[in-house]
Length: 71
Picture 1 (cartoon, rainbow, N blue to C red):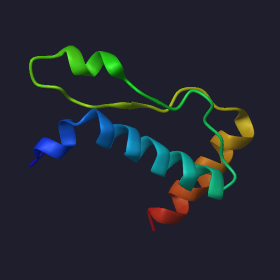
Picture 2: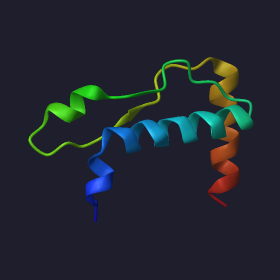
Picture 3: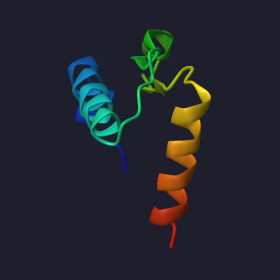
């Protein structure tokens, strides 16, 4: 169940930065990684992260990482 912190813009920015750091540590760059600010105009904010675009080598690395994690 979401808590108040899950609707906080500062928390969303923190999570975005954590994800960016983790992706970079795995050799992946998502240049369009951002908080979707439109999600904050809802009556009940629903913070979303936009992963955005990545190149093919990054997509392959991500697919490889996810296959390894799913096992």
